[in-house]
Image 1 (cartoon, rainbow, N blue to C red):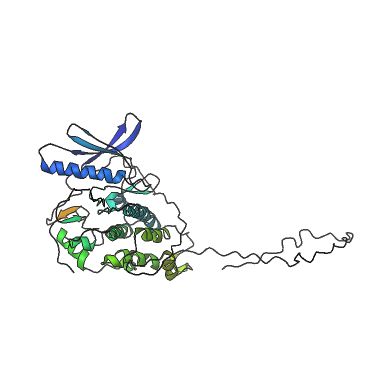
Image 2 (image 1 turned 90 degrees about the horizontal axis):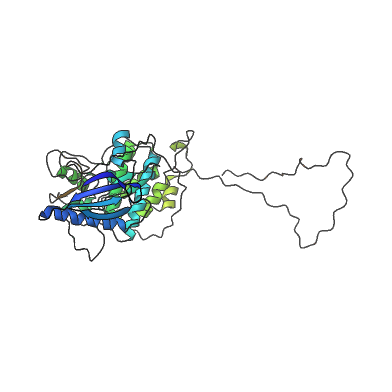
Length: 390
């Protein structure tokens, strides 16, 4: 959708990210791109959330249209995977939970992002994640008369099966795309790959989801089941919404100490699944979500990426050729065939500490106790041991 530059707001004396696109008159393709560009700015401007890149301004100078946005200086998840490979599970869950919160926030306002992928998850210097690029978003606005090109809209490596079949994207489609992104963070590569876009789309629709437990045997069972639920082929079999998925991920975003391993955790996967209520939307069971403590995780070795990448012709738009970048966004009509105590009593604190020394005069007799006052000793205090989360 254009080039992104590091720029300075000379009035407010701050650095921003400047996204620029050409608007040459008479060029229908450029005009359509400009309309989509404006929609992106309007969509993001409506969503004021700590995990969504904030739009500061949109304007035009001559034949250049630009959006000024918050400068997010930690690069993106795609770059992080490229340079670091598989991420620590707690860190991956933390970043994915940030993105899930952002997606859920947008969906509560009637929108569907439609292109959740690693390169659209921006990283801040303190290790947080911000969702970017709403150029393909469905704003849920009945007055929005802009129409994207006919065909499949999305990115092959993260596209939901129903969208790959040519059906409209629904909120559960973003959840599937986010689960594919989390898979890449945990495994270090895309869930499906192929020589052509068609190969990848066919696998998204028809091929069973690979076993995450085999690829990452140290992951807690509850986390594996939660990701597999979000990766269900049928949208109705996924989590009720991205908010449920986010809470599940928060429960796994705490780093375990060196003396603690997943095999020694006392809480069972069934208990954690019950706490987070990982249930498909088609079940009508009432649910209760239990919150979990979150440990804020910094990205190790986080050099700031001040040069922000744009579309250089090889990034976000691909066509069905023999060899493709399977993380690229596509809009193509080349559609495939349709086909989860410690308990301790309080010690007598006064015993031995305030005992009278030997030879002390006897204490005066105690005054009678009124009948209304109980002389029973207070019950022992019981401290419940914190549950250890897988």
